Length: 277
Image (cartoon, rainbow, N blue to C red; front, top):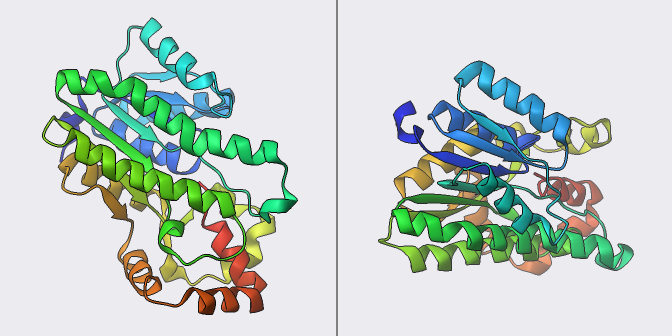
């Protein structure tokens, strides 16, 4: 696949100020897509836009938005259309985890998590899908998680449920639009090296995880983009090691996994660390 595949098309990437979002920006710009980048941090978005333009020379539009605000998805789409732009590819990447016991967090924090991971993702898809179907070409990547395929362990409780929604939503929507020129993919990364894991507080956690379990953000993104462009699958577990892990975990008794996590708090923290974009 070369640069020409994205020429004349525009991709919207949420959560584009760091991590997988910036990797998606570079990968899609490298294929010729113009970009619309959105996240909360305008300064980080502008830095990403400059880095992408310096390498690839594509048009990059920056629109700051906080998807925890229920009004943000509609306002974002309105702002895009007011600029005379249309979205051919949507990357629903915005997300984060709350690695704490459910009852020890505020409801407001959990409500915002649902808004970002579930409601905003579904609303942006709903608002942008009709134009894709009308032109009979569109691509949608929804970022899920390896957590969906793992037995339940303490921590990040609502995160795993939200990502399970993302995967099933992608599967059913993919079936609904099949044969109409639009492909939908839920990409499910595991441990991914991003700036989050470079924080000093995570040093002990990241060192406890073998190198073979990690992927770079660039590798995750490249695999996801190739898969959605090919349109051959709806759910992708990123990386061979993660696919094997998911297959094994499917057959392990949940009580055994929970017992290991309870006896090894560091392992539990490491699992929660995987649930961060």
